[in-house]
View 1 (cartoon, rainbow, N blue to C red):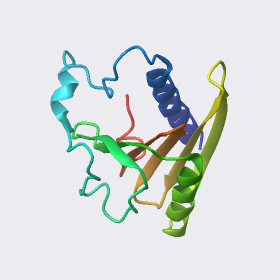
View 2 (tube, helix red, strand yellow):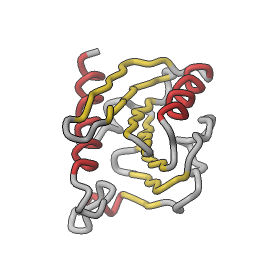
View 3 (tube, rainbow, N blue to C red):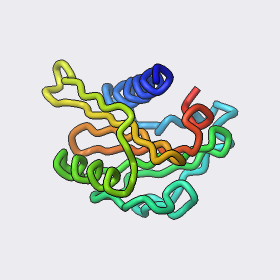
View 4 (cartoon, rainbow, N blue to C red):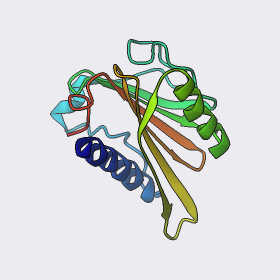
Length: 152
């Protein structure tokens, strides 16, 4: 259980760090000078990806900002925009109805930003979903192995 919590906390910290500096354009975790970027494939913008990771998952409301497959780390990440907190909560409930259980749930008020960041780690025993929300933005990270797929 401690591994789940620490992995989840790391994912939330990475997400929050990426969102904290709005003057810097996002790189979606991909550095062109990083040799690992060769394993990352950016998918079509504006389209919910259809692949083994998203198979069987309900499509969340909002617009797909970006999506990426990482063949080295064996995961798929999708960023959604134009989504409210109520829609995020509804999507989490839909995932639970589809057989996912919440392994960990965290929320934190972001000082100086006047909003709450929400994160949920879910699993159906096969897939692991790390889902985070800040106002108007929702990111879902999907892997089949909770240790293999996590960012290192």
